[in-house]
Image (cartoon, rainbow, N blue to C red; front, top):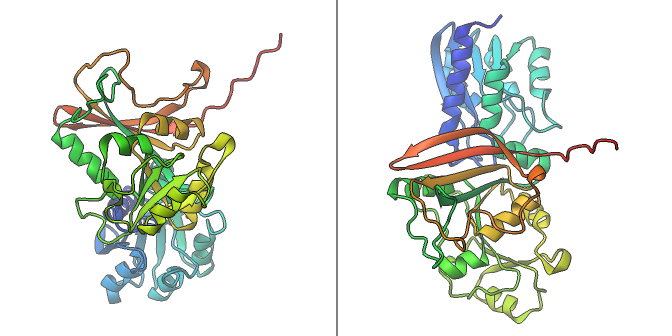
Length: 376
């Protein structure tokens, strides 16, 4: 039997899990609370990949108080060996009486096994209701996409005026948004394993694409440039620190420009697709194989379009400034040929955040299926 207090403790476990947002990749965020009734005995969260999981960390803090207590955990306890031993045996050995689970492990090969093993050991397992489950699943949307679709989670980000312009007709774009919004954009970059831009953005803005706030610690960070024709100079600022820099091109590996980049320690992937374009699914599959669970696509407009057109965008983050720029030739957030009105990607679960005078709007992209044709 689950009480309101149990839901509160599960909610607390989800809050604790959030503390690992910038450091746990490629693992999921997990929080754990051990309690007897409403009295909390111990709390913990997974801090980094390779470090203790939330459950054994909480058990260690509870010590001799753990037998007969309840464990509230934001994600189903694991039963497999990875960087660390499985959590289920530790829970059983500690004498936990009941386990409350907010969400199941998203891995289809694992989901439910932890719960079954706990029940087999005589431990009562209670799963959360729909609201808490959705909250816990959304928290680990990057991990879920990486595990289930075998590609990184993709977030498309841009900044625009209220009329949707990302730059003036002259190309001037610094700065559309204020300092608070720009700081929030840098914080967003901290939580992604990779940041990606097209060659046009590098040629126009010469960005570094680095993390600057220190939230992610030493977690590796990929800085990716899509450069189908290899137009970007090896002296661009994004390449000043070759470690982590990656150029993806449609040009063959024997191209002299590929060799020049490689000679400077810059990694180059040659992944041609149809019509001489870069093969986006191949890029994402290869990144997933390197434990890159999430990619932040920062532009430009044509690069964002290629991801939308390929149905590879999972979430959007748009920073809006309260100004009107105008100009029929001024660029918008997403370029390309555009969608027919009936096939436009729709967004759901829209949230907004005030940042000084600006707004950040985030939403999940809903896959739109073609409408069935009516019989004539």
